[in-house]
Length: 307
Ligand code: HMG
Ligand code: MG
Image (cartoon, rainbow, N blue to C red; front, side, top):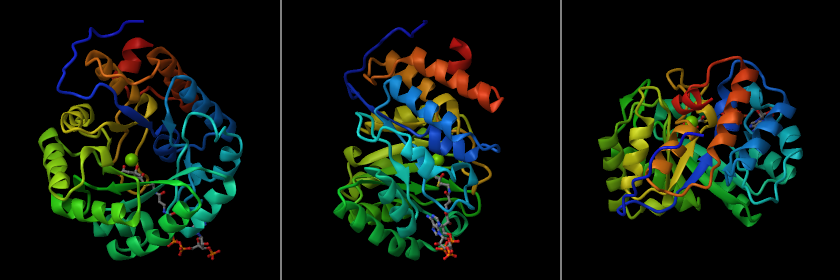
């Protein structure tokens, strides 16, 4: 298969971790409901392509996200003790109870940087979201689970407009102080640009949060996801969220389109000589297969070029 020429930049990390969100962020946004067995095969193919973290599903309220209402059945069919971590989203203690019962080892909580999205996505407020998550993190850690925390609407919000950098840092610090092991900074509606990424990284650094504690989660609504990712890597971020084929979006933020495509990320990392551990051909074949099932063109430029 065609691969880019490699030009290594010694100023950048030699290796990054890819946190795959296609089965969760991707499939939560499809209008149709994908059968559980297809979801299982999707995840197993992503694992076989070399991804070391694959976010599998959500234990949110099934009425809020019916696409992922089969979380228990799906997790029951996955290999949870293999080399690939399979985190699940958890919005509250009820979600944690379900996740513990299913035997997961990694969870991800998700908070909002803005008041309006806390209401729209979680039916709560900025203050109450922390109170909601505190017992989740405490109990999950007592049970030996790893807890990642997302912050959404870190760059812009469809109802509130531009989101001040300090507001994002405040929410992010609160989640880390609860005991989350990593903070994923979400550009839910894809409006960020590289200078904004740098400003956020610098603000976190001033607040004592380094690149090693952060991940970045870009949606590609305005075509900036890959540029933003490069800016993140230049700022010392070594964990990047991406979605196979560029699937994705958030049902509670209409202007959110697909995530950064994992294939587009892998192509760029290969060109930069940054290790990622992913078999691009196997990944492209997986996304072509999934696009066939969903009956649509893959959003990823690299998938369309290589298929
Ligand atoms: P609520 O309606 O306020 O819930 O929803 P409640 O606490 O009032 O409870 C009402 C009923 O729901 C109760 O049942 C609960 O037991 C039940 P009843 O006593 O009436 O029989 N319930 C649940 N059942 C199953 N699982 C649960 C659960 N929780 C309560 N977990 C809630 C509040 C948080 C549940 C709801 O707002 C919700 O599920 N929201 C999820 C929205 C979502 O999944 N959005 C997409 C993911 S976020 C995202 O995509 C962004 C991200 O990618 C990063 C980025 O891009 O920025 C992560
Ligand atoms: Mg997202």
